[in-house]
Image (cartoon, rainbow over all chains, first blue to last red):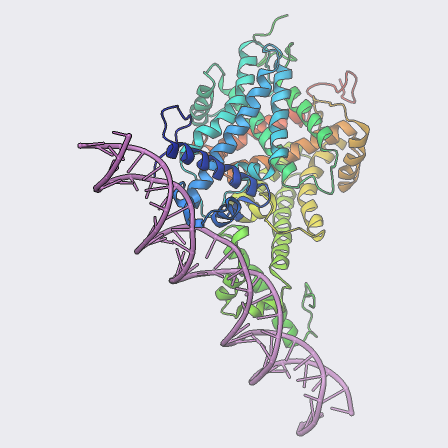
Length: 253
Length: 253
DNA sequence: TGTACATCAGTGAACGCGCGTTCACTGATGTAC
DNA sequence: TGTACATCAGTGAACGCGCGTTCACTGATGTAC
C-alpha cells in the first residue's frame, strides 16, 4: 500500500494524481457518512456506495476499515487543532483571558459542528478498534493549542491559580511531559491545574454533545459562558493576580 | 408485555416467580456481555446464547433490543447512584469536604469497575437508540447524590465559591430546576458553580476511561486526587470561607 | 515516435458471518367449575 | 379433589439484511527500448 503524498507536484503522473484525489475523496465521503451515523456504524460498503465504487475498490486505498478509521481520527484531531489554533491566532497575544475564551469557544463550536467526529475522538472508544500511535501526535495538537495559552500567561505573570495542589513526585514526572509539549516553564502545581482546565474543557463539550444537559439546561451557550467564567476565575487567569500563590508569590504590590 | 414486579410476594404463582427470575437473569447476563464488548455491540442473540435460550425467547421478556438497552441504562444509573449515595452516607454529615471527596471517588471507582456501563450512560450515544424518559429519573439520582452535598454545605455556610459568575435570567430559570432536585436553597451563581463541579467530575472520569490520559498521565489515582483538590479549592468548599463572596458575604469574622 | 511489456485501478461475484425480528408450534402451568 | 379449557414459556426454522474481506479478472495507464 503506497502512501499518498500530501502535496502533488507538477511532475506527478496522471495516475498518481487521480490516486491522491480519490484517496482524499474517500476520506471526505467517509466523513460525510460519519455525520449521519456513529463511528461504530461506519461501513466501507456504504462509503463505496456513496462514491459509486465497488466495495473492493477501497482496498486499493485503505488496507482495512480500521485504517480508514485511523485516517478519520487523525483528520478530526487536525481539524480541531487547527480551529483552536486559528481562534487563538486571531486575538492579541497579550490578552490571555480573551485568547483562552476564544480558543475554548472554538473547541466547543467545532464539537457542535462535528458531533460525530467529536464522538470519534473524545467519545467512547470504537469497539474492536485500537488506535495506533500515529493518532497521538494529532491529539496532542489540540492539547497544545489549549495549554500553550495558559503556559504563556503564566510566563507573563498573568496566571495565578489560587489552588496550589500538592503534586506527588511520580505524577510531577509525568506532568513534565505535558509541560514539554509547550516548551516547559510551568511549576508542577500550575501544570496540574492546567491539566484540570484542559480536562474540564473537553469534558464539558462531551457532556453537552452526549446529551447530559437534556431535560435540564437548554441555554447551552449561556451555560458555557458561565462555566468558562468560573474556570477563568479558578485558574486565576487575568492581568492582576487575585491572590499571591503560597503566601509569597511573584505578584507585585 | 407484562411488567415484572420488583418484589415477589408469597402469593405469587410459580410461573410468575420464574418469569421474574429469568427476567432478572437476562439483565445480569446482558450486563456481563457489556463488560466484554461495547454497548453498540450488545446483541440479543449473544445474550440468549449465554443463557442457553433460543433468541426468540427473549421477546417474552423484552419487547426489543432497545427495551433491553433501556433496562441496562436505568440499572447502570441506579447502581452508580447507589454507590455514590452509600459512599456519602458513610461519612460524618458535617464533614462536607470529606463527603465530597468520598462521593466523587466512589463515582470514579464505579466507572473504573464498570467501564462499559459507564460508556453506556456517559459515553457517546448508542447509534439508533433514543433514550425514553424513564431513564431521566435514574440519571438524576446520580446528579442528586453529588449536588446534595454541595447544597448542604452551602446551607451550612461551608461553601464559598470565589468565582461568582453573572447568570443570565433564562439560565437562572433552568438552574432553578437543578436546585429543586435537592430541595432548593442555592443562589443562582452558586448553583452555576455546582453544575460546573458536577460536570467536571463526570467529564474527568470519562476522559480517563476513554483513554485520554494514555501516553501522558499514568498516575491516574494521583491525578484524580490532585484534580479533586483543585476542584475543592475552586468551590471554596470547607469550614472557613477563603474569601467573602461579592465583597460582603455571609462569612463571619 | 512506436511498440511490447509491466503496473495498477477498479469490477463483480463470492465467502462466511451475525444480526433483529416473526411465526406457527409444543408442552407445561394455572384456573374455573 | 378432578377434569376441561385457557394461558403462557420457550422452540426452531425462516425472513431479509448488511457487513468486511478475498480473488481472479479486464482494461487502461505508464515505462523501457
